[in-house]
Image (tube, rainbow, N blue to C red):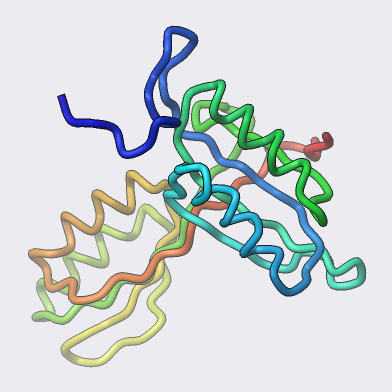
Length: 183
């Protein structure tokens, strides 16, 4: 059995590892992201994806969305430690299995190939609300928004059709309906 990369990632009798999306609202100032990321790396927690943007220009608040994996104990510990950081305003934990949460990731794909291969690739991407961002006779760049696993599958399926470059955002999450996360 392979040795785990971190003592924090070992399943315990209390729970198995699961993916979680941790959302952290912070003051938008120099060094905050480094402190949040430092908390993860200093304790051996892995970050699978990361998305950061200012969401309130007046209040200078940014939203950091982190996908990580851990046991319930580890996720609880991460949330507690993040909550102690200054200038963190609030911390949310969304389980990937929660039907009340929308999870998406954006990807840009550049493909080079014949007209037939391009057509097949575009059809493959169509169900993900794809948008053609750039097009030449021999290549195109297409944008898709989907779940991480769907993007992973698309990458595998597009490679034989001429996929030469991929760029992805980290995952983002939002509650469904009129509800807003409050701590």
